[in-house]
Length: 478
Image 1 (cartoon, rainbow, N blue to C red):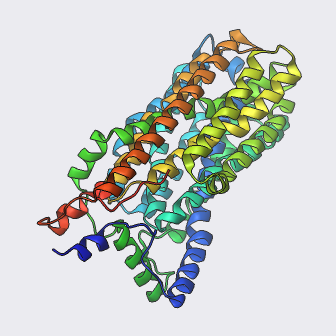
Image 2 (image 1 turned 180 degrees about the vertical axis):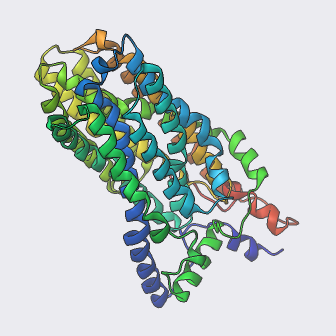
């Protein structure tokens, strides 16, 4: 096979092959359609996921603890059980996605977690609550990794990071709504207890959204009925150039092995692990932290709208900060520094106003690395199976970070929460260090390939495809 054929398979310097003016117009039309239809559904689905995840932290201060007679670390076990369920089921989720239609997999995930949330309203003991949260994590596991992978085979490589930013920001949008919504539900009179109303109403909202999935989503660009034939042909041309055509490629177990043995993938996973520990503080304990400073449950729930607005603002900015700072690694490092400042502020003062200010600071900064990390990873992986496996690894092992957070923020430490803030501070420092190490590794590999492009002589098309991001013409984005 000649060198020109190899360069067509590999992703070269540009994110897509040279396009004519007409093709640029066609690509713009394609992207607008995908944004308005697919991205809107995925983002609103992730917003409802945020509503469902935060339901427990809001139910806790709405009477759940006393009504179920929860003691000691029962609530911590319930919070942690969700992440255990996610970990167990996230690794195989994207490989299953290759066998199951993405349309049904993603909307089905929303449907299942909605049912579990509604059923949580009827638990009568700590054990039942813990099991419900474990099952919730298990059925929700496929949505995040599946959505990340789904976005990667609908958009050209250079457009992925911005869409990832909007996707992760939608979690903050759900967070903005959950506090005021729970405050209203807590204040209402009905035959159900306040915390039961929270679970039922939030579960019903996401259940209704899930029913739209089969009518809105499409499986692959080349089978999407809402695209014109010209748009389908163009995106297939681009995706073939990137070696990311999902509809025609099968699971490649050689790429599964490559993902498992690639230490760069494990470094991205470590970034996710450390970043997620601090990211979930506001979602899991924001209402409790605010309430511990003398606010009523309804006021604490309402005030979380402001902290979640900060989280939304931080995540919405990631596509722009990465572009302005010319790289995801720099953006992650900067947000790590801001997060460290927030936790130091909380640790060095006993003033309630300063504690609330610190909550605002790390609520804004801490979610950004958790959003930048997957976007940075997906921009730097090729092939069909390796990105799916790598995304699942990062989400599964990275998702264990909040498991530590769930057990270090204890009611006995109110209102300072020194132990929890210190652990998250150390995790953020670790995230900062790993980010710098990975950036150095990628830059060094790019320089090596610039000096020695490698020899592809004698390799078959299949062997070249399985080189994925190890292809000598591929360059990592920093």
